[in-house]
Image 1 (tube, rainbow, N blue to C red):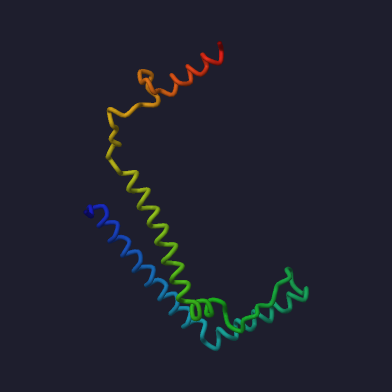
Image 2 (cartoon, rainbow, N blue to C red; image 1 turned 90 degrees about the horizontal axis):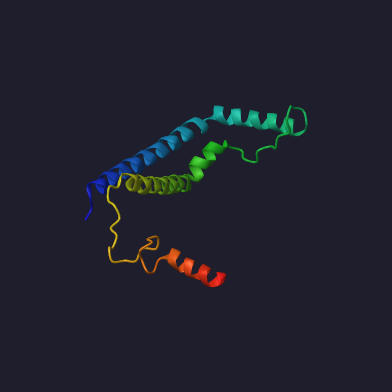
Length: 143
């Protein structure tokens, strides 16, 4: 039977998944809109040219020249969008599951039920007590 906590947790999970998918779609739309323009392409090419000059030792640091003719954000969200979405949903779901597990354990009010007939290992009045067995072994060794 599904309890109230589980229903709330599933609702919140659905909300978070919806927000993650909507956020990734918006990020993709923005990247495609901003980095597909000729001006963005020219900016990227100028940056590559500056990196090429710095790779020859003309700048404060030695840079590698990027191999891509397009900005990395455009390539990532255009060509690898499915993989990015799967990673966001996978890691997000795992993180949420761990958080719910820990939260549920923290708010749990149930106490463990102990069998009154079960032998207690730390009780001194139990004949199967570990301390009694250890005392017997020490007594035997000391004789």
